[in-house]
Image (cartoon, rainbow over all chains, first blue to last red; front, side, top):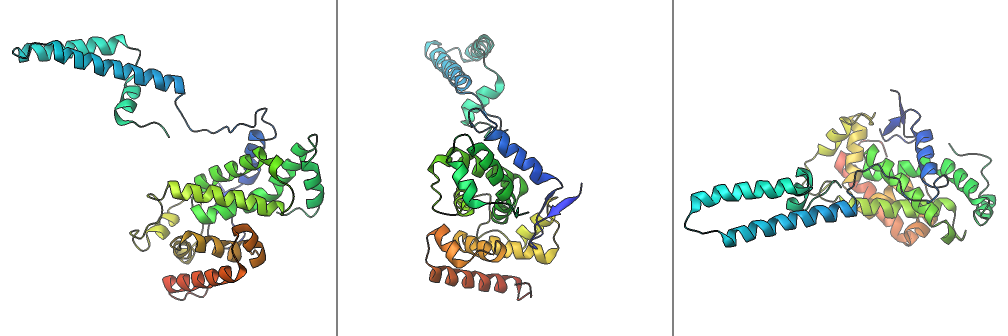
Length: 111
Length: 186
């Protein structure tokens, strides 16, 4: 696609027709928007989803901690198997996806 | 391109009328979006970031349209918002932008590999030299050299004395000349 150069010699350019497109986007987000709210394309997680994700992750950690406290420490091999099974059951019973859990562990999000 | 029929006084009057302000703002966007875009681009270098910051600038202007009293030129008001948005962006991305540790020529190389950069090696090196200036000097240099603003206008925009701006500009030019080795482009 043809590029449109800066009027000053900087080397910077934009795609042909870019400024018409830019103006449309600005006007759509301002005078043509009922709320005047910013319509950004960036992907964000809603606050309720985020809270639900955190709550589920915290519940899992409590369950794991509780399991450690109630398990007989002498039977380590059996305990490990039981723990894995228990964690799998918990993970399967909560409506949490891997990404949400990853976000909780790393304290990150899309932005 | 600037519209010869653009009437600043009329636009300012229309901004105060609820029935006309949307139409007036539409004229403002069409009149100023390109110059605001280029000003931001010369500060942040990349097209995508500039696109976001330009849109945010006009969205903020629209959201605060009631606060604009017409005491300054519309362009000055927009530039002020754009500068705030740009500096906020640069501060947030300080780690990924130019630092003292950025190797010589790295920015120029990055620019040359950018699909939205059509310049030659000298253009890229000039932009690298500018990018390495402290933020205030970059702002002053870009506003004076590229946007061709008068010192009095920049003074109102940055709330800095004309004398300080002149000194800042000349220091910036000297640093750029030193960096690119006295290439005859300024």
